[in-house]
Image (cartoon, rainbow, N blue to C red; front, side, top):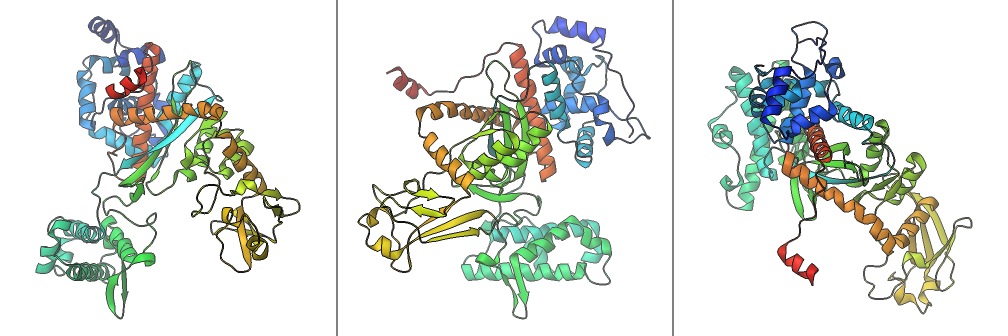
Length: 551
């Protein structure tokens, strides 16, 4: 399909007259069109379409429909039906009342083109640019960020289910693509084991029997992989995605040597962040947070929170579920820099904050990263009063530390963590600590060469860390930080209105595009509420809590 330039000539006269007569108070679609005009021009998506070929359906219209379907929680088929049936949608799209619309499959092709050409962020960029033109959005001020989990559109599998279902998926793909090649390999036992979906309640009883079952699945998988990679096998067999997933999964899950095939156990397994969690979505990962586990992804939403202006989502980041929040703060700042929407203050929860991030945000972006840091360290066995790290005086120039009793450290060692993070280890001698009358309040170190020890960050980070620990105990800081809580309402709105907590697609790129469309839909809804003078919703309070507040 090729892209032919189309001029937006406004809403057709008949469409405008009928819609205004039918909806005298307007609808969201009508108000958005009247206030913002055409949001998406075809030229903004020109690079996703060739210059020659059959003319494509307007990509600007498809982008707008993609956003509307998230705003109203519609499937592709339902969204295409709305284009044909809804007058206010035709008003927003600038269509005649008798316009036949398009087939729903075009929306899937449009999303694939956006991903293929790296245009996943384009719809959000265009809406934010229009808001900036209207004076509703600017750099500086305050923004806040939080994350939520996104469930993959697959089952959560235990290890036995995973290996069984992975082999079954490969057999299903080969049975459809190369039935004549696969037929000599298939036995009655294979059909019995892999002929239907693998579920744990069908497994044999007893740990030993289940171990044998898992090892048998491993042997069957190696038989299939050897056949697919044999010299006489068609080369394209090994390129089938399900076969590639099978090969990777067997490397992760099994050992094979002269003793046979056996499970990998414990530390022999790859870390969860790298290990496949489902054969049907290789990008999904399993993760646990606060005791709740899920298989899928995580999305990070950043929004403005200035009074007197609409609260708009300015950045969306999507990762697999195993990526920690603390790894995302620099990527978020870089994304906001690219949009020229860096805030002066960025409010986040403790999961995003480290001393290094606070220092980097100030030095490289001019941002005050506002969030709580971990409390001062102490020995886990201490009860009551104890000497925390802040009780020690650090002489960075002399590379010495003085304890509360006036003793000076005997060792100062600069080291690095396995991750490359620099740190300093400081030790006091056992002789000084053993004779100290305050030993019980300071250290539980066993007798030996050393007594109390400290771990210090680089000087700029250590000083920032200590300052933030003191500051976050004050009432003024707590009142200032209360603003961050509002982002939880944004996540709640995204979950309830757009279904962002469960992805519609498989794979990280498609999931991220869906999250961007959902965030853009939230912005459209909020712009409509702002233009319509709809007040912000209040925090819901139970009847029981109201009784306490009244008292």
